[in-house]
Image (cartoon, rainbow, N blue to C red; front, side, top):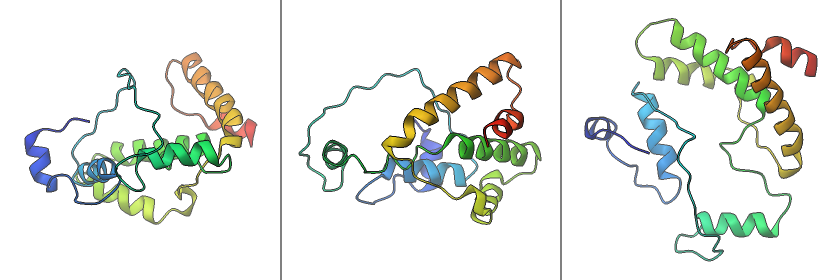
Length: 156
């Protein structure tokens, strides 16, 4: 993740919390209407060690995945249908053109029970991969048209 010095100062820096400070920092950037850029191009290699320095950190997470097949997936990984709905709503909110997207979006998300985050489990992943693959193929066929309503209506 990268941020300009101005963005860093605007949000008050990295939150002083024991875990997930990177996610909290990204949420602060979004809440201040500063743009986040996401890229799938970087490749990251990490250690598979199961004993680490930070209790509740990445090593504990890996150990949990290794020892508990019923452990939910990462909280940032959400069901494909929910992700598509969230992205459509965000695009509509952003297209409204008014300033203060971050605050408006936070209000929408807080008051829309259908957007409530749900955790995936490892057993859910094969079906989610199939659905996501269909969504991507459907978008490619339509030249990037983001209206995936028909695809999900057939799947419901």
